[in-house]
Length: 371
Image (cartoon, rainbow, N blue to C red; front, side):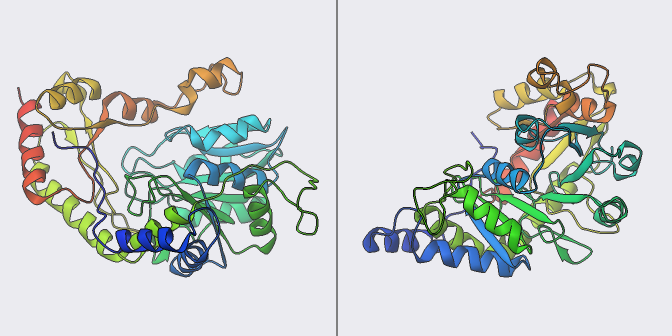
């Protein structure tokens, strides 16, 4: 079986983990947490970095720190993972969903302004699969209307937008360190911001909102979102190799493009725009209706051949839980997002994937899609 993802853990990961064990710093205290946060902030041109236990926790804390609550609206993509919407809905705010751009698969920025109302408080920009959201017009809209920008960079470690690091563009930005990301800590996440106030709020939320002067006295409710020192040790070793990983991913993407570029009836990831070259976090395929196959059909055929794959995101406007809660109007319709889910999937894309495996995957994809 060629797995859909396998991380590379052959740098300093073992050495740093052994240091944690030998020093006794294995929980959420110690030098590895501090070093990981400081070096991550520097790498992404941010004043503050706050390490947390996973990427969803990073989003939850960021939404809470922005003060998003009852009656507020947050403009965000429909084509994303449910982590992006959960805390918005839990806080009594309304997600206002924007359809995807059919070429980049990111939120269609040109559709945002018409959805802004007096209740709009923030725009959530979620960079999807390999290319960033077109941020300049989005940021201009935020300035024009006095809105906050939450930038979800979970998939964009090392990507840039017009030369600026993804993760450096929002009022507050978040990352995930799940094993399929360019940097992994197994589970983990990071919040980054230049705002002293937002950083302090997120640090407090991460640690049960203990009062600094009275540890077990609480003025507000927080969570235990702390990252362990062992996770930070892994993250630090991975961060040291981020530039290498970005080069590797782009070479993998370019090889897939070469091997599959002439495949009729299949949309490959857009290699570049005028603001970024794809980082190929995953290599997605979208099937034309003429093939007579859905994404699910193709994945079944690949599985039978020993090739791992994953479906594209299920659109937020169709999520049963959100509809049942009344958080999404039954009339909401995002046809591009719907088509991407129905006809899209991604093939093995992990950092440990070899050239021979890529060639095997590509040959198998060609075979199962031309039957």
